[in-house]
Image (cartoon, rainbow, N blue to C red; front, side):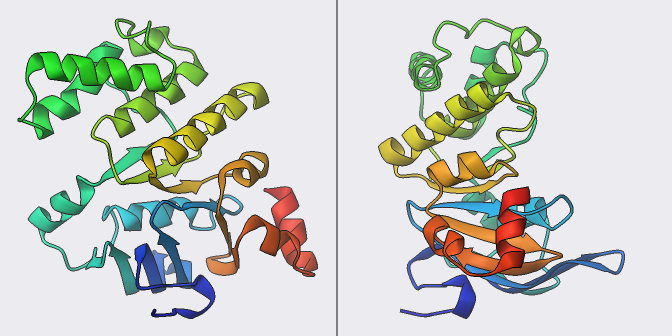
Length: 254
């Protein structure tokens, strides 16, 4: 077993950040951040706006490169992979954006079918149709496949975005602010969907969120970022048990 210090890095980690730095226009957004996510684990990244939460997701998927340190996904250094290598790693990942990021001119069925048509040439049209129907059923949209994105409510769009992220059966799911713009009841329903994904698919989930209530419900670990630094890392119980006024105030404000 290989320990990376406060971030808890281990040999069997699916995702590892090792002393990662990232700056934009001279402003350091991440400062020597280290943590790890084990297979099947859900990590919720907490922090105020502008603390580098979404940047961590972009580093994981290779949309950004670290200025220093390493971002490893399944042992592969995302900064040194060529385009083919990035494609191979990304095929194992799903991404749920703050907005559902659906194609406006496509029905929900067409939005979900597109990734399979482009990336999984082994499936016949009938198999794709069945896969789309099953995935929509899993997120409670089995009767809405013919609807256009504009006809979906905010909660339904989040469900649709999750369905599109899951259609290729990713091993890793990256999620950016899933409860943004939702009322508490609808946000709770989305949280329940993530619990279902976690238990039924054993998917590794990394979620950026301001919603401490939802995070407590689904997280195995918290990573708390403050001004680019990792303020705390551990289970919800471990963090809530810390006698650190700054940390407790920070968590209560998320």
